[in-house]
Amino acid sequence: MSKRVVTLAHYYTAPEIQQMADKVGDSLELSLYARDANADVIVFAGVRFMAETAKILNPQAEVILPDAGSTCSLVTQTDVKRLKAWRDKHADHVHVSYINSSAEHKALSDWIVTSRNVDDIIAHLYAQGQKVIFSPDRNMGAYLNYQYGYDMPLWSAVCEVHDKFNETALNEGMAAVAGPSYLIAHPESPLPVLKRADYVGSTSGMLNWVKQFDREPDATLFVATEDGILYNMGLARPDLKIVQAPIYAGCQCNQCPYMKLNNVERVQRAQAGEGTRIDYLSHEQMDAARLPIERMLAFSE
Ligand code: 13P
Ligand code: SF4
Image (cartoon, rainbow, N blue to C red; front, side, top):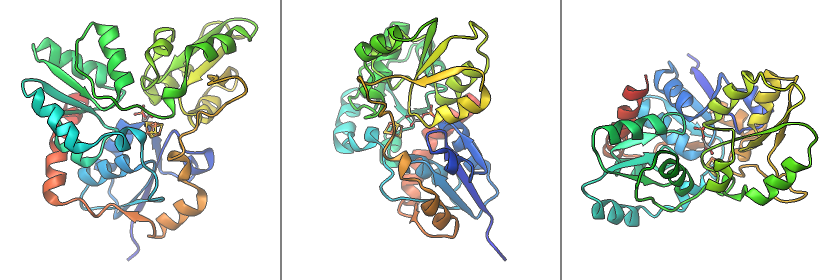
């Protein structure tokens, strides 16, 4: 009997990859879809931490990452031994970790969050009178501290793509367009960029903002995130002028090198059973990492 293969793709993959997928979405949507998928094989056209999360939530399925190199700088910049020492130093704090983290990292966390639910989960913990530490994304943590007046100690890793956005290039780029302009940004961007954004949110949050845009029809919408999602925004609102936020003059380089390792040939090979199998996590590691993820899913559903 042939195997049931389900293909998932993140918004940051190229249009031709998204077109090969059964489901396209943000980190939270893809985690839920993977958990509930009635599949023998899940091909995850995204990055490794996403494929690991799928395996943790659906351990019966074989999970395949099309390219072994699809990591994330938030993972590679985090040394787990140092992270454990940092967490132990703050033993009286709740450790909230962004889903862009390794399985080992998740196992050292009390809660996992995605960019979609991070605001609500941290507000819930503060409302309970808890003290919170946040890892690994320094920019996201700095934004939460600024926006809500928190005092969370932060781990210091960044997304190498979003961290390149800067106020100077944005000011120049936005001043150069005629007519009104707006900025929407992913919370992995640096604080000065987020402070001047008209909307800050997850990939699906930004997409919804664009779908519902009803202000000046001649406005230019600048998008400070990976360029893959401009495809989805263009499909949803072909009537709008949607452009990538400039990084520096003449450079439109906001592409995630790890997401872009998912090409048609590699995804086809993964669908045929070749690629990097997520089969190296022990049951103990998966059980420990599942607890904080399930806490998040129970909160979000
Ligand atoms: P989302 O959860 O918003 O889809 O973000 C994932 C990601 O890797 C952003 O860089
Ligand atoms: Fe990681 Fe940044 Fe790529 Fe997202 S865009 S997967 S955070 S390196």
